[in-house]
Image (tube, rainbow, N blue to C red; front, top):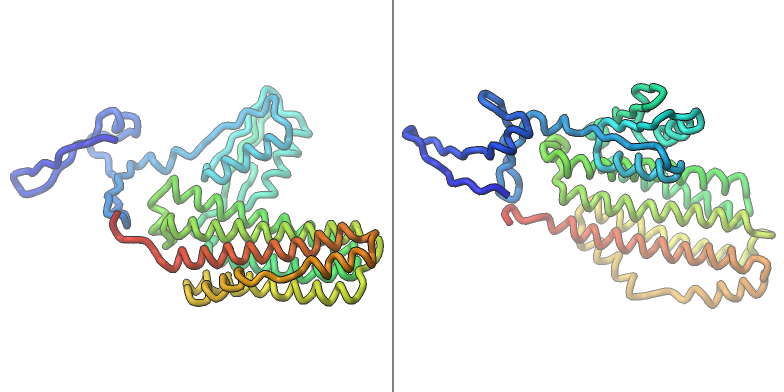
Length: 331
């Protein structure tokens, strides 16, 4: 932190000097135009022209496994880098295929250039083109459809539909990573707050909701993997009870999402009241397992996942309460 005393000129103008070391590092000199941005906390943010250009990074490929490379690229993508250079002594064809597959799994990431020793990725997705509230609604829509199909696939032992739901989990992951990247960009570039109309604190709540929905989608995929492990379709009595549990759990999530979108603390509290009234689920699950011992594990997995998605719904309702409070103007 640098500290400066405010000075008053003869004409009544207030002046503050800039630290020379910082100015040299950022290319600020005589005649440089800088931006002064008031923040909700009451502070004044000074941004030099070069601030938005410091968004290139390099990832060294040598010695990395495909999984390690995937993690590295995703981490830099989330951090908000616009250009990611993957560099190696010589990039082999299978490594290029891996990089290409990783780029295709992330929204807006494209291969800009290639040489024998380098692949340059650039993110062409503009944060302003993907309003976060619309992205959350899209994630919720995909997740709802996944659960509709997951329940049907499990009760009917429909392996083709189960595989389709598992593949759709990747669509949710891509959008959740996009929200994480947008949050990373807001932390790097505070001018974006005004451009996207969302504060960093507000966006943090959106990312929290996206993370909870991602886990809900993961459980839909988990139920579908359990469907693939069934030796025969569940008995009708179990299917009826499971359908009722699914309807109740999904209602929690839908109401929580509505409370979040509408900033409605009354609705959020109504959702959370259900947290104090847990259902007796395991007795009928255990009875079904006794009737179909060969299906005992898949039946338990399906019921457990439905209970867990309800917990994620409660977490969204708590986030709805948090965002409804807002933030103080001054700290």
